[in-house]
Image (cartoon, rainbow, N blue to C red; front, side):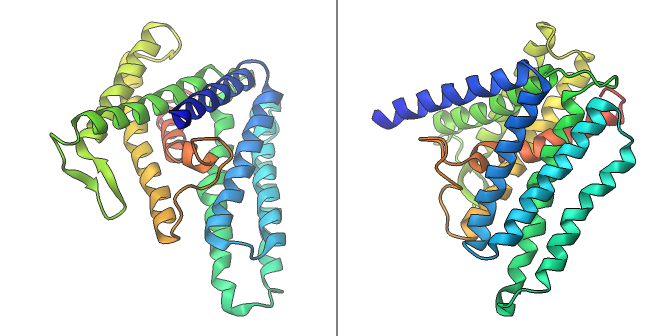
Length: 276
């Protein structure tokens, strides 16, 4: 019972903090995103590299922040897109630093530095494309809609899986996540579609209805793969939770694993149809 109370309180506080950062101004948004991204990278590197290569991990996090900052400036201040290339400078520094590693038998761990940047930093940096319109005006509305669709998919999958999993026990991918079922997958899909429909009806998701529904399907499906991808990493390294920063919920990586695939997938879909 106490664990349920802790989970509920910490979950509500976390959501309220996110809402405040998304809805007030672009600098609060940037601060929140950078903080969450940095913690997720720390969690990922702790899982895959333990205490090795501290300096290189710091450089990688700085590279991620620099990448986010460049896309923030491009989206908000109309700085030419070519300046995104400068985000590679810290990455090159990390590569050069790897040449001076003394523990050559652990050199293979360095691949996890770049995996973290590709897996976490790039999708998070793309949130700038969702948070700013073509004129450079900030609005957390669309990003909030993305989060609502993703969270509804997660909650729907959990609810359907718990309530109907014994009746429809077929597993989704038992070798990676033994508890996930196909009924949970379809429950998440239905929940995300319903969420998108309601967001459209209330005027929060301002695209044609068909695009809203397709967007929700894409984000629900890719979100499941994002969840499974993180589960695979934790299974390989024998870790239950990525961290303990949110009491009762684990780490940021546990909370945003679906988002890391769903958000860029949704952004790509909208960009294809020139809706961003």
